Amino acid sequence: MRIGSIDGRLKLVLADGCVDVERASNARFSADPQQAFARFEELRDWAGAVTSPDAPFAAERADCPVPNPRQVFAIGLNYSDHAAESGLAKPDAPVVFTKFQSSLAGPDEDVVLPQGSVDWEVELVVIVGKRADSVDVSKGWDHVAGLTVGQDLSERDLQRSGPAPQFGLAKSHHGFAPLGPCVVSVDEFQAPDDLALGCKVNDVVMQQGRTRELIFPVPELISYLSHVVTLYPGDVIFTGTPAGVGMGRTPPVYLQVGDVLESWIEGIGTITQRFIDADSRARAGRST
Image (cartoon, rainbow, N blue to C red):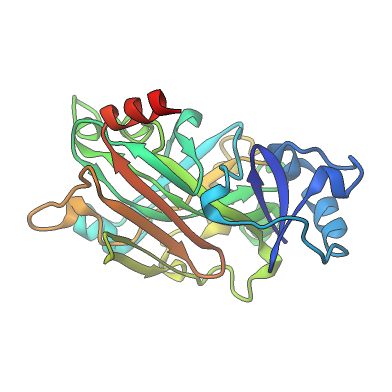
């Protein structure tokens, strides 16, 4: 099953279009995309009988498919090659930080570029489908609703300022957590723990990797987090990025106004961000 959002309404995404879930189910399910994850298995069972779309679905029309999670987690240094390019040792346990909910964005949006050094980080993003407390690693995938594409955009100057790293704040400017174009249920993948992912800036490939290279795979992340906090349906987990970020290059390369960032994951799709300045956003607002 694939689900997404258009105009804030939950859509079941089919091969040739989409279906408005609330209308097609006669209000059995809510139009609110966030509510889908609390009844994900029931929704998936219902969706299996739906075959005909009632509208087109395209990333450029879609909203964030997980608009209001209770919690947004992110994992740092979860690929050995990225740890190496960062000049840091491979971690012995997951490095966890959070991104603020206001940074969430849709799969095809303009992002106002703040001052500083803004970097890209393509990531597989996990959406929790079942409450998790002290889950065993062997049961980790049982608590996952689906997977989506994400970018953990990062302003490196703020991140490295002060006596301690400012991970959460530096990675939470508006638009710094785009997701989409849809959430794909785990059963849609033949090998959900081995997916190709990558990104390019202005058609130049910057990152390429496979999720089998994660130091701490998805089930381990679910287990580790759930032994500290409760995970709720609809929670978001950014699982880490492979090598190829701008900070790790010689000399470093960062995003500029006018750049186009495309990020993809095998079996899920592509998200696109265009970087603009604040004046461009203001002018666009006055023209509408």
